Amino acid sequence: MTTLLIVVFVAAYAAIAFEHPLGVNKSASALLGAGLLWTVYAMALGDPAKLNAELGESVMATAQIVFFLVGAMTIVEVVDAHDGFEVITRRIGTSSLSSLMWLVGVVTFFLSAILDNLTTAIVMVSLMRKLLARDEDRLFSAGLIIIAANAGGAWSPIGDVTTTMLWIGGQITPLAIMKGVFLPAAVSLVVPLVVIARNLRDRLVEAPAQDSGMASARTSEFERSLMFFLGLGILVAVPAFKTVTNLPPFLGVLFGLGVLWLVGDLVHRHKDDEARRPLTLAHALSRIDMGSIVFFIGILLAVATLEHAHLLTALARWLDQVVGRLDVIVILIGLASAVVDNVPLVAASMGMYSLAQYPPDHFLWEFLAYCAGTGGSILIIGSAAGVAAMGLEKIQFFWYVKKISGLALIGYLAGAAVYILEHHLFD
Image (cartoon, rainbow, N blue to C red; front, side, top):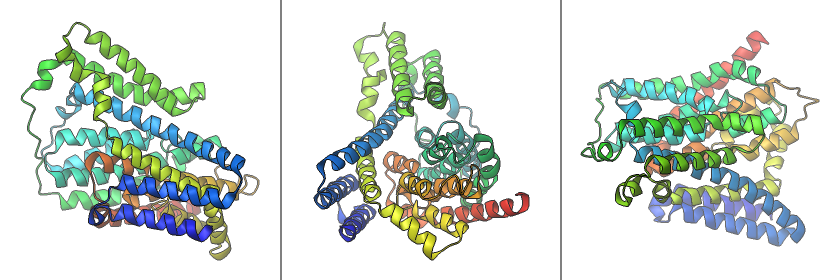
């Protein structure tokens, strides 16, 4: 079974990577791979009760992420329909593309720590579509946003799913992770940002053509500001909602979506149906990229099979036996997170290493938070932020490999070196 599962996963992954040469949509490859992996696993397991329990667990975990993604994307679409991003775009006065990249990188880095890397990537990529007309410029900005969002999420206990897992599990504490990982995470962003900004230093910002005032005609200044700040406020409040209620983040997003829907209906209740329709949440739902949602479902379910088959745990144990050095093992886990979702990798690591042997805020846990969080930037399908940006901007896998992956890898290794040096100097 093990060999067949690996072969099917690699084949599905290759089909996703070669989406354009093959002419097969990546969502189809992901769903086919997930279906085949679960079929092989079910036939080999031969225990319907255990299979149903594991499948139910995986579906529930996947559904939580998908519901969150749908909610966040819909909120962004509602804000966009009201031209709410104009609140920010009209305040950005720089005409230099290089300066804009610096601004976007820094804002994304800190916003990701407050929200989370997935939501931040959706918001910032949507914003850049309002600022940049050239496809190439938007692709570079999306690549930078992926790196910045993952770096920002790595040093905050609520910025990435894996850091949240480690926080809830007792492996890290908020102040310690912020203090220990902030500088390495910042370095992992600054290194590629310097290169990207330098390559674009002589380019000017080319803004897209305005929509002939249509948005301004259908929404007032009050409505644009209201929906922008309410939408952003809902996304910012999700981590606090989770902390106070102990409910999963997706429920906070859906709750906020209901609030946004209610406010929108009340604000536009006096308009006629034709004027109100493009501004409704129902219309926003029709505009989100369901292809990317389906792709995300396929990827998560496929990786879940490897987790239930204990392949990831076996890999971690093999690394422990063969490599031996803890810092090298964690760096390799981070590199693996570029290929395989970082959530099951971190979950496997949490199961392998006990808190009795490695107490809270140990080098292992903090370095794991950094590596698992930033390593996913090396490939576009290595993180939720990357998958979301891939869907929003239709980024090709090999374009990202050619233009962004090398820079992300250099930043990742530079940040890792800084953390190791920092640990030896101050601990």
